[in-house]
Every structure is written in C-alpha cells, then in structure tokens.
Image 1 (cartoon, rainbow, N blue to C red):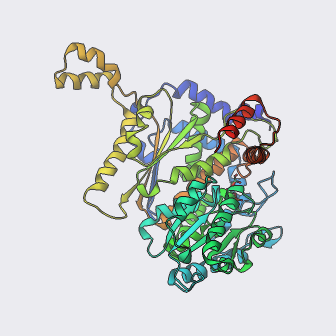
Image 2: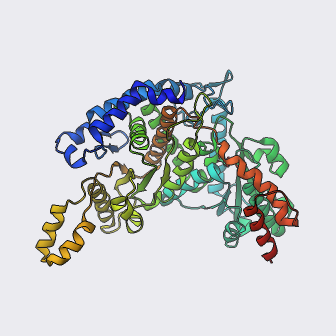
Image 3: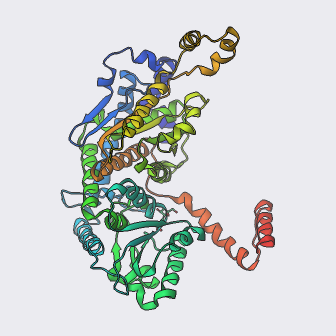
Length: 548
Ligand code: F6P
C-alpha cells in the first residue's frame, strides 16, 4: 500500500466523507442531547479503578464505528501480537520491541532469535532488588563506610525522563534515600546538584543504553572527578553503578562489571523505565513499589491485548487522536494531569510520543502524504489554567486535551482536593459546552450592565465550546495505577504508529544534530574553522570573539 492508497482506502474515505457531511458542523451541545451518551462513550474498569470518559469528543456512534473499522483495517491487532511475541517490528534497526517483556508478570517465555528473554530479565530484576534493598538498609555503604543518603542518576532522554517522572509521581512514598537527576550537558545542572552533596554518602547511577551519549558521559566524568578529588580513585567502586546495554563501554569507563545492571537492544530508550533504568525508582521508594509499577503496566498490557477494540482504552485514545490529527487538522495534543505529583508526566510523554511518532517515512519506506504524530505538551492543572488555558478556550487553535484526575488524594489536606477536582470537572464542561451569546447577554442583564457595555463585551465573553477532551479518572495515585496509566499511553502511541504506517521505535531524527555538534566542538575549543552557512559561521565567530 502506498501513501496515495492509504488516503484512498475505503476506510479513510468513509471517515473523510463522514467528517465533511455529518460532523464538521456538529456541536457537543447537540450530541449531549442523547441521555445515553456517557454510557455509550465511557469505560470503567473497577479492578484497577480507572474510568475513561471519552464522551466529550466530537464523535457519534457512526464516527466511532468508522474509526474502529480503520484500526481493524490497519491490522493493529496483528502488529500487537508481533510486538508482544518478540518479532522484529523495528525494521530500520532490525530489533524486537519488548518493553512488555520487562513487565511480563506471567513469566511465560518470549523468544528473540530463538532465545527466551525472560530468564535474563528476571536475573536483572533480582539484582536490582538486592542492590536497592542493600542500599536502603545501609548494607551497601560508601567508601568510608557511611550509609548512602543520596543517589544521583546521570542520564538523558529515556535514561532520565521515565525514572524522573515516576520518582516525582511516587514522591509521597519516598523515605530514606534522596534521588537527584542530572541530564543537561550544561554544567549548571551537575554543579547545582553536587554542591549540596557529600561524596561519602552519594551514589552515582550512570544510565545510558548506549553508554556513548555525549551529555551523559561528560556529566559522568565530571561526577567521577568530583568524587576522586575528595575520596581518591579507589572509592569509585563503591560510588558508581551503570545501567546499560554496553558492557564494553561501561568497563572502559572504569565501572566494575558487577556494578552494571544490564538491559538489551529490544528495549527502546523511551520505553526503558521498566528495565534496569528503573533502578533509581527502586532506591527511592523500594523494590516492592517498582514491582507494583510493573504489575500495573502488565494489567494494561493484558487489557490492550485481550479487550475488543470497542472497549479497548489505548485503541480508543489512539483513534480519537487520529480523528483530530487527520480530519480536524489538530497539530497538538495537551496532557493535563490534575496532580502535582504528575508534574513531569507531559515532559515524559513528549519523548514517548514525539520521538516515536514524529516520522515521515512509512512502511513502504516512502514519504507519507498525511499528518503523523502531534505535538504533545501540558502542565499540571490548575497551574495551566492560569497560563495557557485561555488559548484552549478562546483561541483560534483546536487543541484536544486529556484531563487526568484522581478521586482520592495521596494526602488529604483540608479541602484542597475537592477544590482541585472541582476545577478538573469544570474545565472539561466549559471546554465542551462553552457559553452562548444568549447566556452571556442574560448574565449581563442580570448584573445590570449598561447597553453600551453589553455591546462592547458580549463577543469577548462568548465561549464557543466544542473543544474535545478525554477524562481519565483514577481512584488512587499509587505505583500500580501509575504503571497502568503509563502503559496505556505507550499502547496508544503504538496503535497510532500502526495506523499511520510508520516505525514508532527508531529515532534517526536525533542523529544529525549530534554529528554537527561534534564538528563544531573543536571550533569552539581551538578556533579551527569548518565550512558552514553564513549564519552559523557568524554566530560561531561572535561566540569565539566574546567568550572570556
Ligand atoms: O538522542 C536520543 C536518544 O537516543 C534517546 O532515544 C535516548 O533515550 C537518549 O538519546 C539517551 O540515550 P542513551 O540511553 O543511549 O544514553
């Protein structure tokens, strides 16, 4: 199937016709005249305690059916089975995609190149348990015999965002060990972390799938120097561990192989928090909580694998995103958690989604002629309400949003939670139904405004509404529901990748900038000159002539 054909398939054509003829002028106010709408377009899973309400989307029963038809025609199910069974669906890197094996709690065998991967996964999990238990119990000490109080994770991208997001989300459960994350090659990042720490009680986790990433290796070398300057060379073995797929590079760096926690090429960086990359999570909240995270993800894996599409949360999330992306021309999607603990969730999903589906080349290795992955962004509510929500409500852009909220707060403090959640419910209501001209004038009249003021203000106060949202309402924020939530998004991303016929598991687009930075680095160090366009050349000149 070529690009041309995808847009010309009956399924795509049906959706396009349906959009133009039956949907583009429909308002959610009209759709909600159907009393049964919530029942038809919501799913409640009481086992894990998650309700997914997608009734505030601009769809009707026919839209839903046509979207389901499209996902079936795209053979999402077939690709899902391929992924879970270890087939090499990442064809540009010739790799299997098995983050699901990392949380395969059934322990049923999964084969890559004829070898069951589960035994090695279980060995590393046991090693992570032993290490994090020892560290937390004070059995693993620093070089001078002192207990480790601070763990510094040095990594970037998938070797940072996932564990950092999870540690923030589970912060309430943290007790004896502090974690810090250093990712940016800007020296300010490591400087600000190290200045507060005592080398005798600090452990560095160097997290890098490849162990060649410039940012991580540079920060790791700085950390090592800092430690060696104060405690000497021999201290390194007590204070450095590595999480990587690259034994050779880890050894070259000077980290003992015994202090390395391995993972494998079938784990993509942005899908790696379930692997050894989760070690800082184990240190921070304990291995049991990490296991619960895996269990939650496994729960969502089973839901994704075994639930008919019509009730399948990630599939529905995916088709709705596809609907807006490809028929309403929405170019962004906002993720808005009403939980301060999830304040890094959107940042994490930016890599998860945009590095996965920010692609233009399809299954046939041709350029697509339709839109693929959206821009993902967001901040926790209610902070976002006081910054960018104005544009979502009344701007000219069309922005579908996910609202994530919790029924019970992790810690009850006065009436904070009811106030937070009142905003959560109010926002999706306001976005969907808005405020009509008649309602605005009526409220002005009641407030006794002059005719002149009413004339000036009316249009400004109208909310058009018809802004679509998903509401994900979860009973409690804990490791299990967090694992489930993350995995739901992972499978949404996967499903969309299949529907767009792209490889969600490579990331060639990050390479060129890395190569060019290596060309430029000597120019900034010794003033040597390479060939550049006039803009880049002159900027480098200005930098070099002004640096002190
Ligand atoms: O540059 C992008 C990337 O390759 C991500 O995919 C990855 O998560 C990140 O760099 C870090 O890579 P590594 O874990 O190999 O240091």
